[in-house]
Image (cartoon, rainbow, N blue to C red; front, side, top):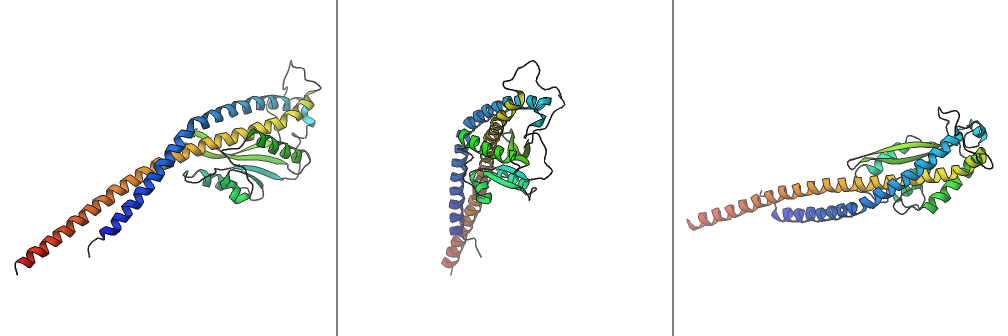
Length: 267
């Protein structure tokens, strides 16, 4: 039985339509990369700067009584999970959720529509604002000081390169003292170091959340562009293979018709 050329034509059209879609999504992702990288860089600088200040304050002996340093016996884990607003980004979202499943007892706060579909919430990763991060940070810090949360973490995606992104978890509260036991020296704080630390921590948490969201979005855009490039190449190869099969089928059908005509004329 010969190959159905009509089915081959329909399949070629279907794959060609997919190729147009992947090409368009790849172009959109490419157009967003520059802004995403700039936002990631700026938020990372802010988080690093305020993180350095908070760490130095936390290392001071006077700040040992801060509620953000004290460890509680009960482990009440809360994790901010940052995923994408859309799919078609390779393993970007699935890697985040795979890591989150390692903490079955944790409370999850979702950022990104894909995460919100699983854990509830309404935060968009692409349009997540500083005001939203600040409000979320204040609420989490309040709950931490009241003992409703004893450990706070963020699951996000680390941007390594355009070709590589990796899901990770960072623990941001309670604060952990570093090896620098003396902390900041030569600086006078008003009214005192403990008060400054307690005031700065919500800003620190805001910065860490904002930086993680921006880096995750840059990772999502990069992952989507790579995924669409790969899908586009596969679609082009599939079209070439189907077109070759279609041409062979047509040639075979024409040859069969000619054979039948020649055979009929000789009777």
